[in-house]
Length: 132
Image (tube, rainbow, N blue to C red):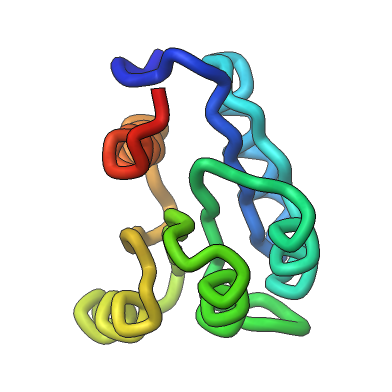
C-alpha cells in the first residue's frame, strides 16, 4: 500500500489496449485505489468534464484523440490536474518526455512498467496536490 495514501485515491486510465487498462486496475484496486478506465482520449476528456481524479494516466497513442491532445483538453478543464503520459513507443524518451512536458504533463513513463513505478508516480502526485 502507498505510504501517503490515507483516502481512496481516484485514478483514471485511458489506453486503447484492454490488457493495459485491465492490468492497472488489477494491480491498484486491491491496494485501495479507485480505478476508472476508458478506451481513448475523447472518453478521458468526457469523463474529466464531469468527475474529478487525483491522477490521470494517458497513453500517447490512442484512436479518436491522442494522449497529448487529450492532455491539452484536460488542461483547459482542470489546469492543475496531475496527468501522466505513457508510451510503448520507440521514440527516444527525451523526445516523448519533452512533448508531454511542454503540454503540461505531470510526469511520463514507458510501458511496460512495474507496480512500484505506478505507486511512486501516484504518491508523487498526491504529495504535490496535497491530497491526504
